[in-house]
Length: 96
Image 1: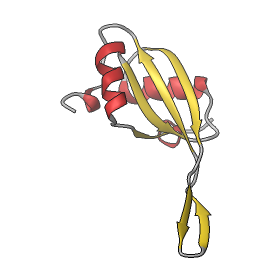
Image 2: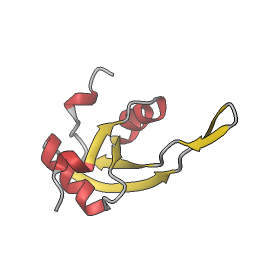
Image 3: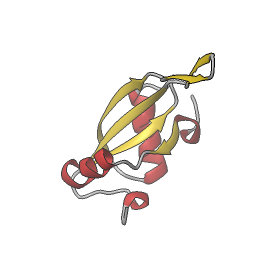
């Protein structure tokens, strides 16, 4: 089993994520590509000491980039949306 810090790469702070946090008590994270929903739920609960009700995941494909005649790709990554129990919040996101 992976450590929590290997599963949760970083929190995502975007306009959409802020709107989800304010209205639905949901938080966005960039997670490891090989992580499943159960691992993500356990990692969020252990790192931030909150109760997670559900986790939704989606894979974001990399974009095609070009520099002169050379074409490459940015790496793909995985995003997770964690829904917390009513009344709980993550202190890291407060004031953002």
